[in-house]
Length: 230
Image (tube, rainbow, N blue to C red; front, side, top):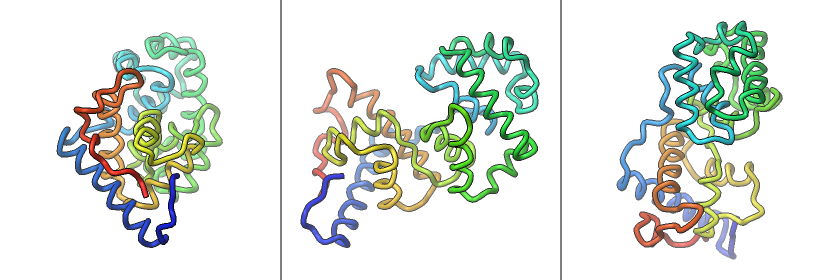
């Protein structure tokens, strides 16, 4: 993260103000995003795995297939044949790989927590996060999406959109990794799962509408006049 000679306490307060200012600007422009779009926590967890390396519209097709086959249930997913699961989630891409990852995650939930999401999410956040990261194919973004969106735990999700916006505005360095960026958010904001949910969804909306990978529309962006980080 970019820093200066400003005393630590003053810098912390200024950065908190800036992060809240970003949130307020984006919320004023876009309003509530109502993300994650899922009917159950199980569906959210499945979506968190399927959305790896693909667009959400492809995940929606896979989710619809799973719903039609009555597979949006932990025990059903645990017992379904790999080939049948792969066929259902084919629209999400990398379907064989995602079948293994989804099976590994569901198997862990069933074996470790008796198939109970309530029991799983009753664990301490840090402990559960470490356990999720130990499951095959579950990286930080997927684990944190599960914690925040399915478990309503106060963990900020960092994705490519977050990195793009914050780097372009000089808030983070190119070399800052996932954990470093996440700490910026969680250190300077209230630990509020609902706010983290909305904040991340607003970042995604901003990146898609304005802060695009190519040909960004900076003039129309609600963050166009945002001061740089201290």
